[in-house]
Length: 230
Length: 359
Image 1 (tube, helix red, strand yellow):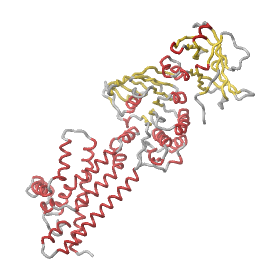
Image 2 (cartoon, rainbow over the protein chains, first blue to last red):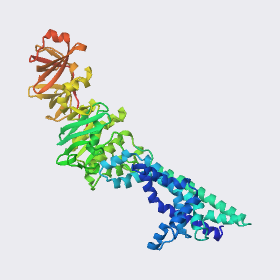
Image 3 (cartoon, chains in turn red, purple):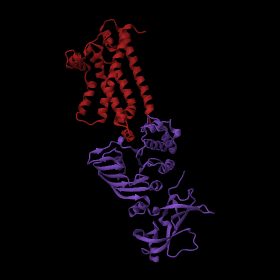
Image 4 (cartoon, chains in turn purple, orange):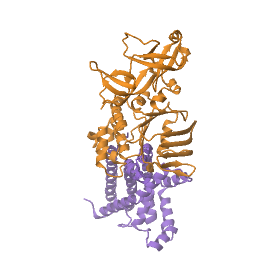
């Protein structure tokens, strides 16, 4: 049904987006928690930085990643010297690019869910002998689960569609960094490959729609569990 | 002993509480809304921090601003039952109950579940419980952490009347069977009468009067709280005997003063609290004969207060150790020439027992 080429792009897309979302989830929860619950100097700046990828042109993000994380970049060089990790022209770089771009969506939904958790329940748990850490893992986090699921799926869907930052940072290498949007771009560029482009277009629509439906279903499941606050 | 000496400014309210409370029974904290009742128990629980002062529970210092000690709520071992039950929606009833347990104690668990009648609810989620059931689970959850003290913040206030009546018997059982001292915030006099042994009245962030319920009830500070028809005296009495022919029980106020009340199913010698409305007490100078009134006590006039605006006189009588208030008209008081120290007879038309054993 799918050609090898399409399958390769599809699996690569899923791998890059999946890894990006899983890696950024703990950081996303931390950022959301800081923004929802803490008062500190520079909170507005953190809020701004987290949301910046939402409004910046993706090509700017790709360019910044290239300058910072490339082999000659400050961070990129350090990581290479210490761990032998390279990011440019590798799928790991694509993971970073899509993680940065999809991060604000994840933080936004988790933050909203955290703000919806009743602080009174946390107080009640404290009076029952639970330390703040136990309260976070037994009360706050489970009650935030619907928001975490929504945020994760939303970020995943956004990651699947990432184009600008990826192509700028890690280029368009089949089998390494060529995700579905990049593969489609190559076909559009190639004269006479309209059918291949159209096929990829349909694949993109199907997986985007599927992830939205899964997100909706999972959120409903999670909400049913924690519904009807007392 | 619970020793409290705390100050805290909360908006326009200055909380300044100095209090010594016994470590047994139920102590009611009473006062109108916004006088600092809930703020006080929040400070005790550690959920809010006093500006200054100290709290000592038994030999444990919970908080002492001079020494820089402030135990967080989870280290205080103080159970808290909130007005809104605050059950965790993602745990079953059983999960809620055991949330605060540090050791598995099946006997204690079974006892508490039986006491509160929640064994059929264990597998359900809080969203499917009624208000009264939620509150019973919340009480159980607080008891199961084996607290040194239990705080209850108007546990009945958010419930409708049938739910209140459903929960009340459980609270009465709790008061009798559980050894944990309880601080019970309320603005309901009825709840105090039925549950409390001690009471503290708070107004504008300060303690107005504190002590045994019977003595606070008869104190002048309490009078503004009781409308004329609610004005009453509380007296402790001991169950003595049941009338051989009629459904009446004799209770003794002292060795030579007794009252007949509706039949009580209580063993001889048990203490009950009786309530006598001041409007049901009349005074005669000579011992009445051939009267329909069964309860006549010898008494000495202790105090006479005139309540001018209503042309009423409140007379405080002393019967042995107990105090008894009588409301008379000014006309009657003038005609009888009542004076402090006079020996009179009090005729009592109605007596009710307020701490009723429903078990």
